[in-house]
Length: 297
Ligand SMILES: Nc1ncnc2c1ncn2[C@@H]1O[C@H](COP(=O)(O)OP(=O)(O)O)[C@@H](O)[C@H]1O
Ligand SMILES: [Mg+2]
Image 1: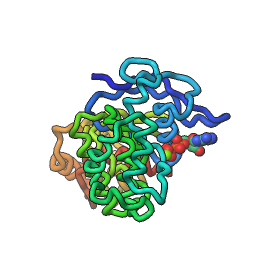
Image 2: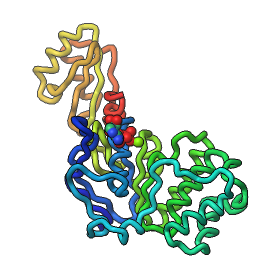
Image 3: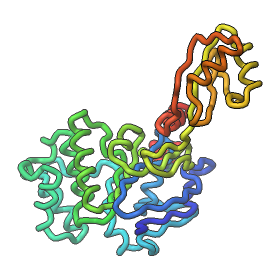
Image 4: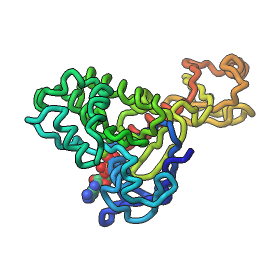
């Protein structure tokens, strides 16, 4: 079932196109990661979908309907670290949020248990660790049992323990048929908690699909030889190995999946090429994304 449909969503600030013509949809029960380096448009996208800011153009439909209060109440949103009151307890902070949203107080204990803060619910917010604060922020987002969770960089600023806690919590909620849309600049995080990802580069979608899929399924063999000119000549004249690229002293040959490195090696021997390096390399989606993320840092 489709939970969200986004069509041509765009946000400009003067001449800057922060988010450019995004079109995608979210299905119920999946965990989506919006992945991209700083400044790629993740927060802007989530802010528009949360109706915190207006799009410059484009549209989106939550649950097949136009925006409005009725739709908004189905979303649990954590855009930035929310402003909790330092001197109030976790419970009293959640009571304030429950009042604003019209959520029954009886839900508060359920949420506190879910985020693992029930035992500490009477402690003041300011005594919490960063991980606990962030879990409370997620708790505030899930108050009222929304069908969709929007989380912007939920592990930002946390120590490894806090990160593990928050990721575990997200995985748990993913198992409860919630649709989760989280933004992160960490590929590792998206791989650990998401099933689908949308990769942004300077406001544009450059990948939208499964986290595990192999975008390219291409096999690449790395070659080096003393006489690189002779090597490239031999490759050019071959039928199976003519698709190659040279980067400095390294040759990357793209081959069909049915060709093995030993076939390639034998071919080189027949043509008197002495290889100094031969390695099999499968270009994975991960490497593609890494390339993209590194390229623009
Ligand atoms: N209120 C604003 N005014 C001007 N530029 C903005 C504003 N908000 C965001 N931007 C710009 O939009 C781009 C995307 O920002 P953002 O969505 O925060 O990226 P991310 O969350 O991926 O780091 C950046 O270039 C940022 O400087
Ligand atoms: Mg951001």
